[in-house]
Amino acid sequence: MPLAVKDLFDTAGLVTTYGSAIFRDRVPERTATAVARLEAAGYANVGKTNLHEFAYGITSQNPHFGTVPNPLAPGRLAGGSSGGSAAALAAGLADAALGTDSGGSIRIPASWCGVVGFKPTYGLVPLDGCFPLAPSFDHAGPMARSVGECEAMLSALAAFEPVRLESLEEVALGVAWTELAEPLVRTRVAAASERFSDPRPVAFPLPAWQDRLFMHEVAGVHRELFREHGSLYGENVRLKVERCLAVTDAEAEASRRERELYRERCLEAMEGFHLLLTPATAFVALAEGMDELDIREQTIRFTFPFNLLGWPVLALPCGLAEEGLPASVQLVGRPGADGLVLAAGGLLEAALERAAR
Image 1 (spheres, rainbow, N blue to C red):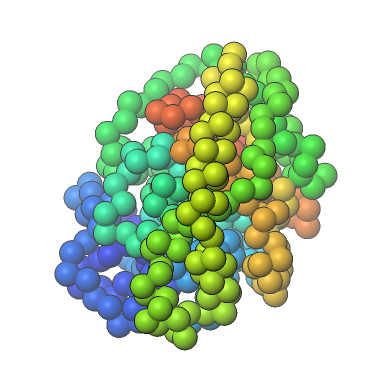
Image 2 (image 1 turned 45 degrees about the vertical axis):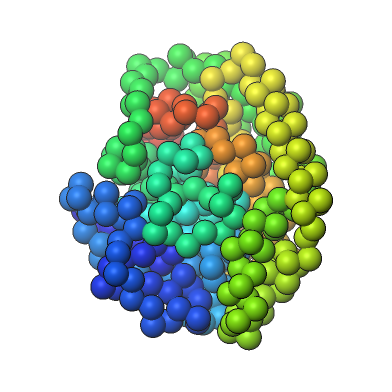
């Protein structure tokens, strides 16, 4: 099975750059555990994929190795930071891909490139041999052109309990945030929710915009490297790292406390529901010339909450929206409900394909 590997994962004997000029010629001696597990299961690494520098961005505009193109929509962004993995799938260069997700980095490119991406429960897939971004937010996960292939990849990556559902009628579904999406994205997401027997709106909270803990963790990863090689960082990531280095311990601790309160509120909101359905992104793929700093917060608005929570989330295409480009839904479960999310996602995928015929 041809596998594309995000160039954030070490691969023994193959250049691994992390999307950075600093590591342009780095050849690791050991392969990351996630990659090794997939290779042991029969996947063949056919290439490393480009990404936003150090995975710190949502567009995969990389000043060192170029902007990842969107094969579905020339002139549009592929999304990031796992943009190369999504683009490789959309272009037919691989049948499976490995990505990471710290704020939406699997789900945003999956959404904009019209493929499937899965962010597992935090800690389920090992991250050793993968360059960190913000360690308590970082996830590794599968990307593919079908839910079934994502499930097969997860079986190779981690021990989890597959779930078998006979029908989506077995799933109590909450629906949130559709009113915040662009009109056609909203229509497609609402139509996807109607494939369940009794979808009900739920007041699932969006977090007050607080990313100080995230930024503090980024600073911890980059402090020494940036001190020594700051001039080799691209402008976009250099500016963000400088902002991260200014975050105080007290600000990070306050953010950590807010995160715990947010987790409690979200568990309360999920009472009576098995899964939550939301848009993956509020809009379709944006133009290549957009400034990542201008679109960052609005792009990760629906994805970042689940990195705060560490919950499993599937991003699944749900039809064409504005300008004929793909829209995507998120199916979200409580921690450890990876099998349920994938089982429901497989049934939803089949229902959407039948409706499109």
